[in-house]
Length: 390
Image 1 (cartoon, one colour):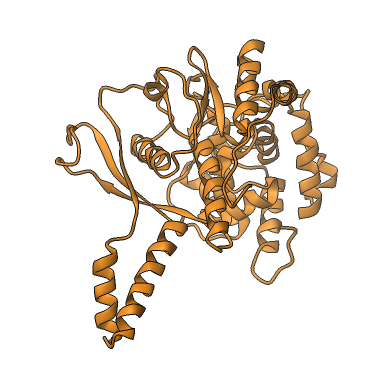
Image 2 (cartoon, helix red, strand yellow):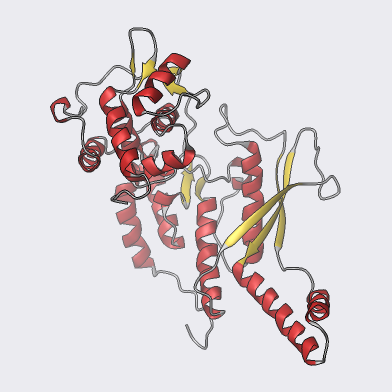
């Protein structure tokens, strides 16, 4: 940094090559569907990540077959946050935040068919712009007060002179003519919001430049970086009937008023994969973490399906009493993540193995009794006032 000006530097070519080689060795086995990419595609993604300072393991960039390496919404967010943190430091703030408001677009905002298309007006706020605006109001207000005006009158005049809060506004839409594969894995409303968000980031932080391949805008631009190749929906999916739900909830000591949930039929157990040692169970919360880590290591390089993720999500929610906050606490304790779409494939398979949903004699599907007991012990430990390892 020279004379309080931001100096942007890029890695040298040899640095990029070294980083790319290291990334390429891990990418094929550590990102979902990475094993479906060719060596050249993996290395292309690694070079793109290294050259732009993006983390492919956090969804900041990914590879689209037939298109090339692309930045994810997470990549734009990361770069924008870095820039905002720099601006915040210059403004004497400890850090910067970005937040959004979403409104359904009006017919006069842009050309679209409100009966078929989905368009949102996205308003972006940030702490640095807000602080400058607020400081300007207060300084102007002080000037009026020094001239003898009352506080209320001074403040109103200052607001009028300063104008409205400086925000960034963009519109994001998904049109009825757009198609995203045989199975759309991302809600169209959320996709429209993310498109508007990315446009806001580009407007607010024009110095950020993340190369995007041709046709990228028409293919995908959401944060579901796990989608490298479209998979068919898992067909081994069964609804968790009311009796099965009641059994599971009752075993955990929760009330049976959660509403309908679904779970997935556990496939036949592969005897070559690790199974928790029954003699040592139920595990203590601490021992459970260690066992999950061992199981996760045995699944390294394996790929889970969307059905596997859905199964784990629904069963963990059930085991957490159907309460979202408790589900996230349970997931955070078990694997260190609060969002299941961030959890690596091997960890998903380890969780699925631990939960071990089986069919009962009466036809209901519920998690293994040991897993229910262990989850209950974790939930008890996570109650306010209890010691935790988090």
